[in-house]
Image (cartoon, rainbow, N blue to C red):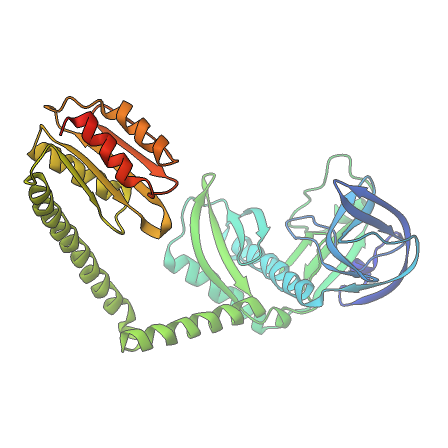
Length: 396
């Protein structure tokens, strides 16, 4: 590869005729090293570019022992090849990364807040500022200054300088890898920022389009600030508008009343759920009394659609009302066959031992302790035989 790779020489280059110099495989994933590349390898908080190497898809790009490996979905051969860039992904990264430089420069230069970390995510990007908290007013002030600089359409340039020359410049950050030697790459936003960076950036702040601060959270004694810029911001706004249109249709109200209406609906739904639970408990109590009043010491019934917890509650209520009785309840919600066996304190039935016999007969499994056993059956085809066995154990 040439001393300065193509992605650095011209970040707007989308296709390159190059040569595959070396191929290999790591963990089952093929890779290739090229004579030159327009694909940026992951680093400095910026994700790797994607693209296509001949007919192969480039899944990732990573630096490895002084070379750049292109991880592929299929092997390629050594020799001449056409490399193409996923431009939509690259331009998005350029917008977010340049937006981060601007945000960081304004936060430091205008407000005195130092950036300690940067992350470019697939949905949101963020910087970490060395301030314990930020008010809504402070965030608004930061966003307004950033917007003014974007409107000014300041040029963004990258250049390489010697470390000696860099020492004479007002470089915002000189964070370099241990043992680094050679020239430094500086990215400059005309008039407001000069920083060491190896990433890809737009040529003018106008191309950032706009930047919106989304929110904050505390992080390592500082504050993480989330943001979106450029096309991401427009897509996010479009998604919000589509979502609001659906909510307006559902609620029959306008945007300004949506939050109040939804809050009222949630309160009503919570009240309704509470009342449903009360009615279910009352119904279960009445059902338990009716079942417990049946003649004989065995109460058995199949209740379609009940879950295990519902069967357990009902079985406990039955034997609490009739301590000498045994209850066998079954259900088949969603095609899964459930059973619960319970015995009152005055019943001689060994619940756990008998329960194991029942699930074995019904081709299932289960467990329990004390006076309650629950399980799943492979089939209820032999349910009548299971009831007969229980009648025998209960002495009814």
